[in-house]
Image (cartoon, one colour):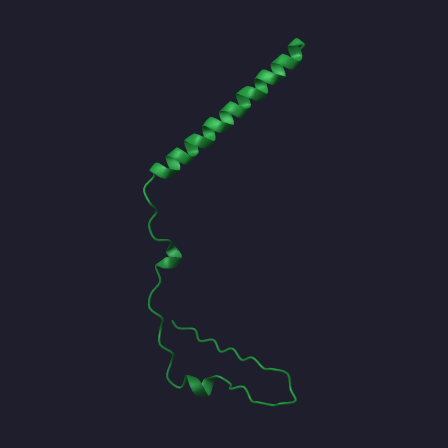
Length: 79
């Protein structure tokens, strides 16, 4: 094997060893870290109540056997 090939083989071997050591170190440090606290999306408040008279503000779907199914969405914004 020529000197150039031997140098490349050593470089690849050192790189692979560094990758393995860094991966093991990452896993070890990750396992030793404190468990994370609650995420922001888990810290939610109770569901707000619907405003009075919401039945009259939201359209109700009408049933028509000849028409395609109708979906209705009603959105309320509280301040």
